[in-house]
Length: 309
Ligand code: SF4
Ligand code: MG
Image (cartoon, rainbow, N blue to C red; front, side, top):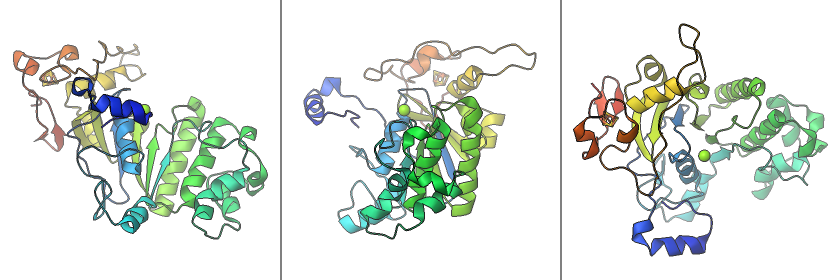
């Protein structure tokens, strides 16, 4: 998968097989209806690329993105694809960049419905109240709001399209810590109320802990562990997951700050052979340098590590 914004550059890269960057591969996961699936990994792990593929901003070079029985990547019936796509909305990390500064909030929120020729009367006012803002805010412009309020506006706009699935790419990481929990709580409440399904993308395990039913941990474009949220926090099995926990900003049982992660993320164009995590892995053995571990069931989880047991 090429995640490059310039089409001409993409064409050049395609002719250079040695420079080919596989952003994501062998990643397979299911999100049950009304479930919350979190993809967690450091920057460069491929999590945003997967989010973009799910909402259709990128096409996979191989593989499927299935919404119920429709494979968005290969379905040729345009009406079916459009219907499936209309059930998916995305919320981005930066609420500043994703709102048109020259539009009133009312028009921003109603836009997805207006584009389909739907009835937008009172829609923005109703949704603003749903996300904890005031109906009177509909006539204001984005610059009149704080970061947290702008993210609420983005959420209202996503809801206007009446989605089933919302892909949330780091929806709170641009916000002040004090505001993050409020936005996450709002998203939880809306999920209940609208029966939403979330794909939640984050670099921070602690952010997704209370939101997610299931967590998939990505490293260099591959899933290395997938488990129920509770089980993952109780027993992280992959050494990389354990490293992410150790890096989370928190104190240990003795009130000392815990260790930051060790080692650099390798170049994704030229990932290490065998287990791509081996240069950073504290328990790597000889086999890890040459043999890539497959995902397999260990306890209730799926883990890609030779030593998962
Ligand atoms: Fe570490 Fe080897 Fe497991 Fe990779 S396969 S995480 S290098 S022990
Ligand atoms: Mg990202």
